[in-house]
Length: 445
Image 1 (cartoon, rainbow, N blue to C red):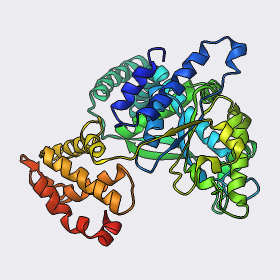
Image 2: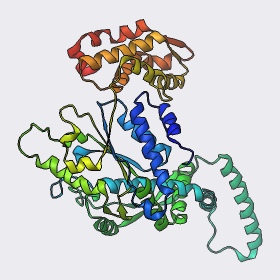
Image 3: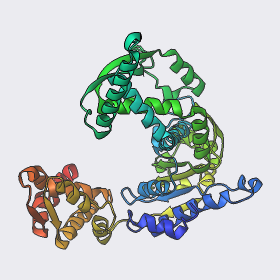
Image 4: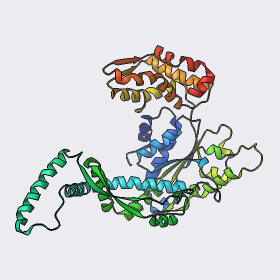
């Protein structure tokens, strides 16, 4: 992570996100400060908190994408949650601490994926031997009179099958494998999910659910993955994996808390909103730093980075509880997307929609070319619809693009080998009726 300077982080974000320089710079500094903190003496390291922030801007301008991409750059556990899905402690619904438990689960998955690569060679070797054992069962009581000859014959057959196995010649051959599953009896835990329980109760309930071993006849190509996963489970140290996941969550976890504005009560509103205020109060200790009990052990949230976001159309960050404002001290405003921004979004990012459609139709043997006029027309229609109906930012491009490409995509299998040009006239023709009818476009575009 040392090479990821703030400039390099912004440069990496630029490959996927157009504009929003202020938000990118804030994200870059927050990420770099994590590396800087790790270089400090231990006693000072504990005192340096994360740069928790609020991203303010309408939907579709890149708030979530910035947070998700920055987490990917540093391989950090990242979870996006919606503030409105949580309820105050004591009410039916998810409590705010469950977001940390979900974050740890993601960290465990990440660590397991990494540890799988560490043990891959040995797990693949064991899987191959196990497949050969299934193809050539070892006799329980070999014939002693011809033991040497039979053993040599089995060895030759095994080597022959190994060569076929490695060359992929036996992929469709069926073998029987044992699969261990856990299934709760019907009626158990139907009204309350396992994630709503105390972690100790979760573990207890899981132990109560009986394990079932089933024999399945599957092709070798499927059996290989089943046996490989089983071998990885044997080779990976579960306790060490859980410990690594907890440490990663504590030091580099990122929680993206969307729709925070839905928890704010406008200053002119009358009367208390118990649900909103209650969730805000419950968020306070989690964001400030507390210890959350999880099935993998206690997790401290002191250095988890919280990035909140919201449109704040009908309210403002100052309508949040003062204590919560203090725990999210940074404010970054994201810009509305203009027509020129939409043009850039259609062409510049590595995952631009035009590039996606070109790649998708290339699988059918159809080459698609977008003219500059077509791109400008798509951006113009999307911008017009955002202004005349609901402003959903860059997401409007997808709805317009799908409308433009619908007929081509439908007929693509019958047009293999052709080169099709999407120009401005074609775009205008495809969206003319709907883009002119505001009432109709509210439902379709």
